[in-house]
Length: 295
Image (tube, rainbow, N blue to C red; front, side, top):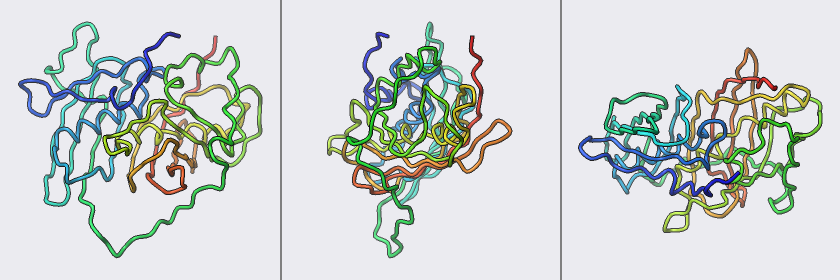
């Protein structure tokens, strides 16, 4: 495939729409496509819209909750931001994001709710209540973990542009793309990095981009189901993201567990650690499990 390399910080940059208060536009390029635009990429775009609308440098993103109501193709999108609360130490912003007609994009047109994201921004304050209850899994460093084996030639997940923008290494998983494996604990630990890091001027990651490594339920579901099940899509319906620390460095460690799968749905959590095994974010996810018809 010939796809322009992705830069997640550049590719989620919103632009204000002239004449419409709280309205923004963006273009999610082909680089972030799986079958549609990756859910984490659309959520990251919405988070950046909230930040741009709020214009509060004293507040940082604390948490967010995304509801995926309609699949969004790569290409032009528009978003509206409503500041629900603007307090001295906290603020809340509701963002609605929707796909535009690529032939005639009109970001000033009627709004829709293909994606809805509620964001909480807060002021960092000293507190006597400080602890971390999560413990990073005991796994090798990323350079000591092998890259995933190539998928079979007939896999529906070959030639996915998103996979070319990131690097992903399993560190304790039984998953093998090209052979069967028994059902095991529904969890996975993996290392993740962007090939173009989303660094701000101070060298830290832009927090909105944590929505992409937070969108990681699939490997845990795959591990729990085993390798004899047919290929399936994990279609995000809800994705929550709590940001607990600033991110620096190249790699993130994703520790994912699916607490339940059944009736066509799966739910789970992901703890995200930096390369020093420091907790930086926690994600919750509910998804529709959709088998893929081959042939």
